[in-house]
Amino acid sequence: MLLRLQNFRGDVLRFLTEPDVPFTNNQAERDLRMMKCKQKISGGFGSFDFAVSFANIRSFLSTASKHGLNLLEVITDALEGNVSVFLSSITTS
Image (tube, rainbow, N blue to C red; front, side, top):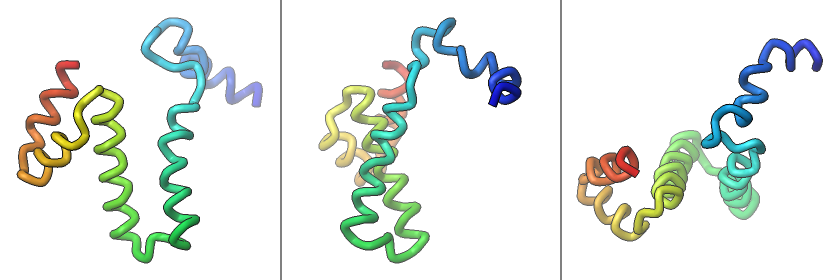
């Protein structure tokens, strides 16, 4: 473990020099919780393709939420093929 900390010192302590980097991985764990909940309730995803689709949609909605976007508008835009609206919103915020 000491060797790993030495090898990744810059990454482990990055939160000290870059204020945008969180000092815990709590947000990552929260993002994964919904996946595990879905898996528990349904007993799995049924297929690999469905699991990938579910993960992509969750990621899309999570990113929109973190940027303070209206989820209904984001979903509507995505279904209409207007993902450029979403992309421009997250790159300017």
